[in-house]
Length: 176
Image 1 (cartoon, rainbow, N blue to C red):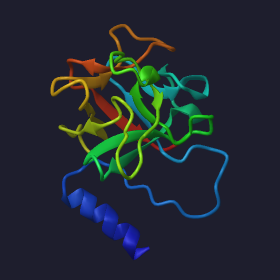
Image 2: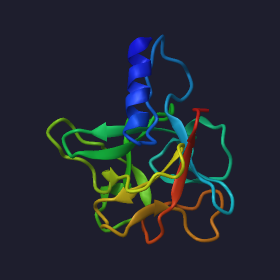
Image 3: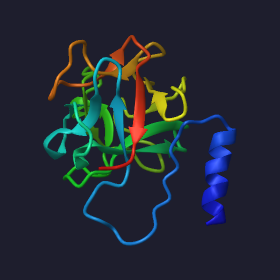
Image 4: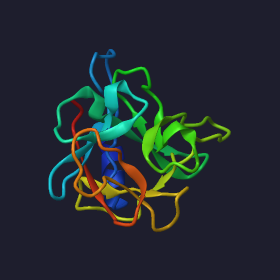
């Protein structure tokens, strides 16, 4: 238990709004990550639509397809959002749909391995903290002014994009 507290304190001291997940106990039939939702002008949660491979807007919390784990990729020195729901794409990362480097709409693609080979669009910087429980995700593939976000006027089933020009805050809440 002391180790868990030290990790949380270290993250807080470093000024990171990164949730630290320490799993213990048997696997459960629910998600294990966090729900990540854009909450300006209505809720838009990342959702592995139908279990994937699309990552679309869902305007409510509480469904397992909303569960994503924020993970540090030490090989690339970047963050990744990993599907931690129970669908067939569990363990895949949010990136360019179809692993197509010309498609900025979101889908689940392979995360990579210890030697690299990350899918297109799966690597994020977190340039801004949104007040303790939220972060802005800047997509490395799409450039310094490209951020994860929903389209204007979004609704259920709309695609998220990795190249929006706005610094969109995504807030995390417990898994569904």
